[in-house]
Length: 500
Image (cartoon, rainbow, N blue to C red):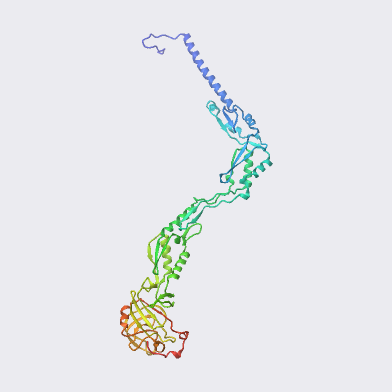
């Protein structure tokens, strides 16, 4: 059975009619008060839906409790004081003062937008904090006076402007590559800049950055292309120290030299084939001795220029050298290597002669055999008869064979045939051999009884020559005793002399 609860230990008692009415009246009073508060709160919110909250300012002007129309009107009128700060190239600033410009605010179209931004339902919280807005104004001014002010700005002086400088690559003295940062310029589009200043003044702005109208460097230090090219360039320089043995000379490529072999087309860096080819050609020109003249210090201490004849000496294999150098630089290889040759002498020193070679002076009709820097044979000889087809050619030649008991000549073809015990050919049919049929050597014998081009050596000396001269070693012949007539065919002279 429903009823009013009675405290434990107390007897049940019904609430009187008067008590029930009092309770109802209290409840209605509370509800009414709450409704009144809500109504009041909403009424204030409705007010601030059309008015700015307390502590609100626009462009520095207090607009508390103003309508949008009232606030706009408050912003109109003379702007005093007014200063526009203009930031230009190199972050330099200049100012335009509003004094004398007769500036008047004729409208503030952004005010209504500011009013819409505030939340009227939160007017209590909004009233407790300051709200500041900035809006564009519609400002009228003396355009002629403004134009004069702009003409006085240093940053708009076209004669003083200078272009920016792009970031670029620079090769240091040691061959390494660095990125030189860009340099900002002061060049800007004056027409667009002036238009922006007029717009800023016309909107009542206090500051303006002319950065959009400044001519900027097209390439900066962080440019991906510059960075990749610099890295590629310096990557090749890891080969600094690469050393080649070139014709007996050690040549080390330092960073500066390797840098001279690189090419940069603006997109990629690579080893230049033409530059490497030029370097190899220079090496050949400087160090090759094959079919080249070279200086020889003779037995007597004189300097003789050896004719560019013969087949002994260095001839660098320029084709393989080119590919080898490009490959090693590309891999950053800085080791030491020997190049390959079309022809290579026996030794690295003394133009490939070392201290072991045969020296023949045709003027003196004398021969010296050098072995490890010492003369082991010192003898007179007889060289070719000074007529066409029988002269002994000058130059530097390699010994081709070492043979015993060889028949030289063909009696039916060449008119002579002779057997020699020792035969060291060095230039076609020319060679060193014993001549036991001769009783004397040296002097002027060659002029009337010379050989067919060979070097005749005394029979008792030739075994020592044969013992000390090896295949591949050089025979150097100098001292031209002939006149030009011996190089002209003269059949009447072919019968002179018969010795080999």
